[in-house]
Image (cartoon, rainbow, N blue to C red; front, side, top):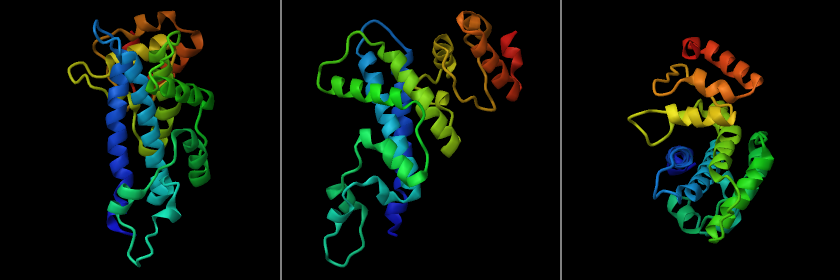
Length: 227
């Protein structure tokens, strides 16, 4: 295999992390003049999900993300190179990626119903008729933390909460938004919260969710965050 092709999974992964950082930020923060972030968070969440799925598929073989492999053959006896892929290749569409993921890795994406809602919302926004009644921020976070986060933890050992664009505060407000919505998330071993009170944020959540949080904090030795 051309050595350039071997780098494709890492290239895609780096872009996916960038899209995830923007998606987390746009879904969590809301300031006057940034109302359009409601729409951006869906676009970035979907983009991040698409890229992460392609990165996982490309780990099996970089060419599996392309849907027109036979059309790439220029019949000149040369090895396929990265320039030819960029110039002529077409990757699988967002709506087909769950099937491609299953066919290539045997993995099924969790929460397929949410995946479809994000696909429809993304298409609407891209065609300038964004859904007005939907809570796009909640939908973005549901997509990231019920689909993307479990997959990237399993495959890459990544925790989605660690990727955001607020270096001064860290992931405190991301975690706050997830707790308020009762969304589960992967917790890193060095988990630390300083800007919010997890105990106070948990007051309005279900007993089942409180137990889940307690169990996760026990695993990383941070039960003190509930005191």
